[in-house]
Length: 193
Image (cartoon, rainbow, N blue to C red; front, side):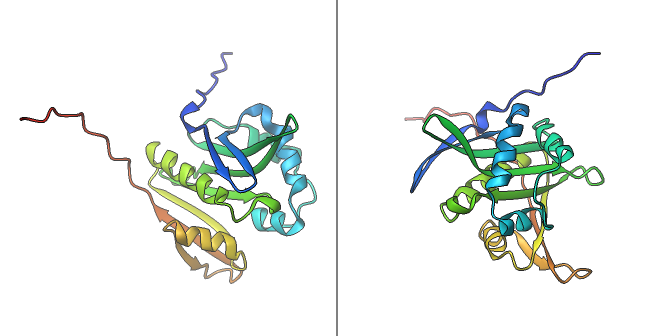
């Protein structure tokens, strides 16, 4: 059996500078499972609940495997990390997964470590997810979040998402945004004198 390794999207690697340090943003690799575990353990119980909308004390191994099994097309995950004292520490994560029932739609999720919030990391990750989703031909991004998750709702509104309470569950809000394909750049034309 031939195993095809997905092409790593190096164009998504970037660096951002925020108060407190230099952050590397990059697509997740399958070998980042331990970073994922450590990141999850570093989140407060409230942050875990906002991200997964349930109480989790630890990430189940099946979820870690799903987080690591990415193809960069139907499942893209980006992480934010810092390097301190020669150690790599994950401080944020954003991902989207294409909805099998609606192949032009993806569902996204974002989490940022408690001590790194309010520095533009979530916005930067979301912007990159949106661009890549649109470039991949996806036309809509959605997410469900707790109505009490003011940070996520505020981020979504600033990013142009529609936010509406879900009728069948008063505790959840639906975030939704239409995506548009990137505009191709035109070749340079010589200027006539």
